[in-house]
Every structure is written in structure tokens, then in C-alpha cells.
Image (cartoon, rainbow, N blue to C red; front, side, top):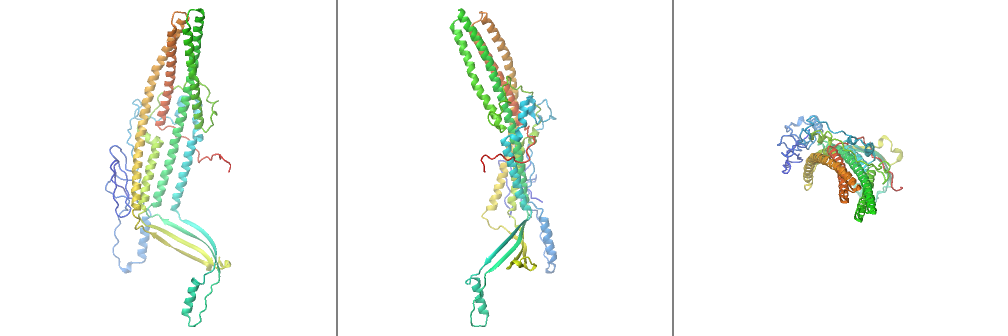
Length: 561
């Protein structure tokens, strides 16, 4: 059985006061945060942490006591063994709508594909993404932290079983004549009728002891079980944080790859415009030699060509940085992926908008939301641990050993000695430590509930923002594509007129600059559309459905030991 909790409202917390020893409190819902109270029930007038009242025993006659009373005590202890004080955790309701993000999808919209990067139809990107789960250092660190939480859970669960220790010792002892031996001498002389006093000499002795001792705490109030529940929730939180790390790493690699291809495309555009500028420069110099143009046209065309050429080193630097960033995400040294990430003349073509699903699925798909819920679960279980600390601690203790003054008699039956029995510790005065601990756990639960609510709201906002940015950038890209086509046609016309001597050089120069800017803007927009799409996939929580290593991978030592 478990005690129930009172409701508390975010921003105006209502926690039940202590009634006797061990009152716990749960969190409730506010109109702005529709959630089922973690560790509470719809009833707001039920105390938390206090066990259900039991009927008072009726007076007994002296003759009725004895075996019946001992039997009743055992039955009561057996019933209490199933008691978990403190609030029970109930998963909160995120309160997200069931309507699809996109009106064209409807209520039955399917969630996005777990392998969303395949939509770009780039085999290199697909191969790189497949290596993230096993190679990324952040994922490896998260895997180690998950293993640590599992080990910690084992530490907490060990308290459910008895602890048994074996021991053996040997002591060579000589008693002081001014200590116990002197006292025995006085006692012996006082009881003797003789007037002479003889000292009682105890020779040095050897004491051999082997045996074992056992101790078992009876978890009557659920102190250990609540600790295990909290540890289980922390294991779940670590697992979700690892998934969240994988989602972030997959998205980061895709972003770096998209920007790498964008930088390479910008290099290709710059080289193309440099070739056009060199061609115009040659025409201007040829016209100057023929005397049909001034030196202004030749110098201006040369300056334009050098301006275009000066942009290429910066783009090369960006290309190198993005390539090294991808290698770092895959635990590769700088330059290791240079061959695989060779020069490409076109940026990634962004696919169409994916299937988005419904907002209510975010709570199930996004690992950060599930991690926040697991944290709330652990905080709720910790309240039960704090409540159980108000109740008596009962242990069963026992020692069995063989003790002898001569080693050859150690393993005889007559050397056996043992003691066994229960012990109980009841907190009486601790200067408010237990009460403050309980209030601290309640505050931590409230903090975890606010963090969970913030995570849910932020996830919803990220999806909406990413979807809006993707759609607006796609519209902008369509307009830039039309501008690029017209700028190309204008440049061709200006060049043709200048070669035939009909047009002016300034018209060619303006057309060239307009075309260069339009080409750069279009490719930048193409890159941004793909980046917005990656952000959208990450906001939807896609990509965590991957196969992880079973345990932490031991890295190679940096230094010899």
C-alpha cells in the first residue's frame, strides 16, 4: 500500500503539513499545465506519507496474551512489509493537441521516418550518419553514464537482501596485573577465609575465532523500494539522455555536411564567375589594344576578376572547417575524411516537407521530454525515501562463530557460539533534519515538474518555428531561382552587346555583379532550406531509434601505465 498526496499548483504550491512523522506531498496541475499530479490522486484532501489508519487493539485479559499476541505481531509485520510510504508516481499529461501540424495531413498523420537523412538521397551522408552511434564521443560518454546509473541502481537494490560477512582473527593477549587481573585478585581475597593474599596471575593466551555475521534491514516502510524506484527512474533518464545525445549528434553531422556542400558549391560558383570575369577582362584588354576602348574598361575588369578570386580562400577555409567538424563527430583526426568529402559543384537538393505527425506524439518521440519525465519520477520516489526516514528502522542481526584458546579445538562442536536478534532505531530528535530533507525533496519534485513542462512547451515551439522557417525559406528560394535565371540572361545579353561594340562596359560589369550575387544568394538559400529541414527533423525527435553498444567502449589509454 502507498500513501497518497495532496495537490499543489505551479506558482502557488500547497504542500500538506507534517502530521506526526512522515508526511509526503505530491505535485498537481495548473490550468496552464494540464498534467496529472505526479504522485497524487484527484482527491486533494488525502494526506501524504501517512499509512492507512488501523483499528486500535481492544484491551486483552492477561490470560489471552502470549502465543496469540506474538502471532498477531507477526501478521501485522507481514502486512506492513508491503507498505510504501510517500506518493506514487503518475505520468503527467503533456496536454498537446491531437491535430496534425499540417492541415493537409489530418489526424492520422504518420510520424517522420527514423532515418530521415535518407530523404536527401546522398549516399555519403547516409554512410556518415550510420557511423554516429558507434563512433561519436558524446554518445560514448552518454553510454558510460548509462552504465554508471545501472551500477548505481545495483547498489540501491543490494539493500533489499541480507548482507553476510565472514571473518577470522587471531589474538595473543596478556592481561595487566593492574587491570582485570588485579580486580579478580581482590575479589578472590575478599571471598577467601585465609588472611594471606596471593596475586591471581593470568598467563598470556591465544584466541582463535572464525565465523560470519549477517544483517538484514526489514523494508517495512518502503525506504529501500523507493530508493530502487528512484534508481530505476535515473537509469531511464540516462537512457533517454543518451538517445537525446544521439539525436543531437545526427542533426549536427547533417548540418555540418549541408554547410560543407554549401561551401563547396560557393567555391564552384566563385570559380565559374572568375572564368567569366577573366573572359571579360580579355575582351576589354583586346578592345583597348585596338583603340576602341579606354584603359578604364581593362582596369575595371581586372579589379572585378581579382575581387572574385579573393573570395575563394575564405570559402576554402570554411570547407576545411566543416570537413574537420564532421571528422570530429566521428572520432576522426583532421583531414581523415578529405577523400570521402571531395569537392562537389552542387549543394544538397532539399527534399519536400516530411510527414510531421501530431503534437501529442512529441511526448513519446522526443527523448528530452521522456528524460524530463524520468527525472520527475525519480524526484517523486525520493519523497518516499524521505518520508520513510521518519519511521523506525528494524534490522535482524546474527553472529555465528567458532572460538577456542587452542587451534586444535577450534573446529569442535563445543567451540560454537552465536547470538541473534532484532534491533530497532527510532528517530526522536534530529534538530529538524528529517523535516528539512522532506521539504527539500518536495521542492526538487516541484522543480522537476516545472522543467518537464518547460521541455514540453519548448519542444512544441521548436517544431512550429522550424516548420515556419522551412516554408518561408523555401518560398524565398523559389524567388531567388527566378532571379538567377533572369540575371543569367541579362549577363549573356550584356556580354554579347559589348563584344559587338554596341553595349557599354558598365552594363556588362553590373550584369556580372548581379549574376554573381544572385547565384550566391540562391545557393545560400538552398543550403538554408536544407538546414531548416534538419532542424525540423531534430525538433520532431527523429533519429534516436538506433542500435547502441551494449556497454561502454573502453578507449585506448593515452599514457602507458
